[in-house]
Length: 105
Image (cartoon, rainbow, N blue to C red; front, top):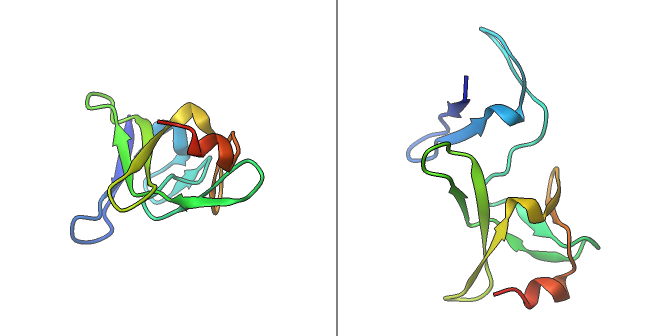
């Protein structure tokens, strides 16, 4: 199993890759880590709010998460690599400060 798709309503399907799955049976699905979802708050390494996840960018062949997109203004956004994510829980914690985030292109 490469992963599962969770149907959450009209155009709200969510894909969970197998690296997020701890145990999979006929009746249950236990996760090893919380999933990264659109709308989840993003904070820096110090806990300072940066924004919310607007879009998930996945590899077209493997569906593996590559980047998260965070809006930084009306027409601006920043793409954050999966490797720049320090932790995932109720919030996504990046492995740098807000000041370092603002300098990213």
